[in-house]
Image 1 (cartoon, one colour):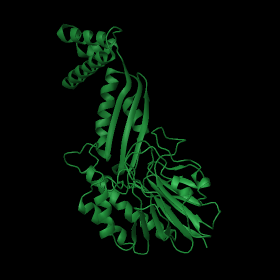
Image 2 (tube, rainbow, N blue to C red; image 1 turned 90 degrees about the horizontal axis):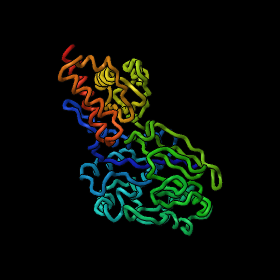
Image 3 (cartoon, rainbow, N blue to C red; image 1 turned 90 degrees about the vertical axis):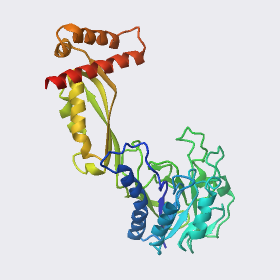
Image 4 (tube, rainbow, N blue to C red; image 1 turned 180 degrees about the vertical axis):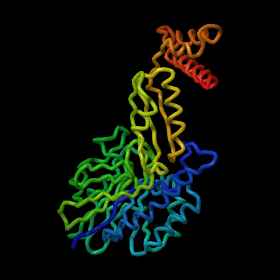
Length: 376
């Protein structure tokens, strides 16, 4: 009989998103925090829809070693509201065994019967078909391979061997992490469920990163997913299906500009046209633009920003092309023109440092914007 389970990781429940600016009349941080808690219910639904009886959480269920009692109790209660499922919680680097010892004590004490805390690296029976082989993280940072113990970890004869671990695989990380990419072969695993990498990645047919079910960074450019895994029997190739679980889309788009281009129209062309309230967007402008184009781009960004959950316009790679017509708009003579000419000379100077040139360019752009605004 086919054995089915859901593989998820890195819920980071309780994350406060202090790096996201909070609008005076908004609550984006609260919405992001609630979405992480809500991922529990979406994982439960994914498991029910696919006929799975187990949800494997491959580390970092909680964002810190010391989440508040309400964060812990409410998360456990949400798991308990799906009593037909068994939730397997592995300590990760954020909620590792040493730093988060009180957290795991609370989970062991207060968790409902269908929540299992994997605080020991010993085999766990998942029924007649499979044995779970967990690798709990003892310390936040470590250079050793947490999956080495899987090679000699025993199991029930004839059952599926399913490993559960948290960390980086050496062939795609440069952080000093050390999970062997071929651990499925050396440990005779039918599947190795990994956490820590927040993006979706298949290392091999049997070694998989599911990513976080609710994204928290612009890096991956898609909504979070979990994995529905089905294995027909020992030695069979796992059937892995991605199930979208993310509420919010974190995405970064590039905006290449050139002088005399309509920057507002160019910006509008790269923006998502629907669902903006649940999109966190970073627009990275590059190329060249005149002073007037810079002002028009910023105004266009200011107009559309309220549509989004969060909006950033990054112009570090957008150069400025200075034209006499732009300086004439500031002033054709007098003190303002002298100031503008001086700032342009500094912005284009080959003897000043990059930082000094950037200060002059920013000052000139601000002067142009102030004069233009006053004229309008």
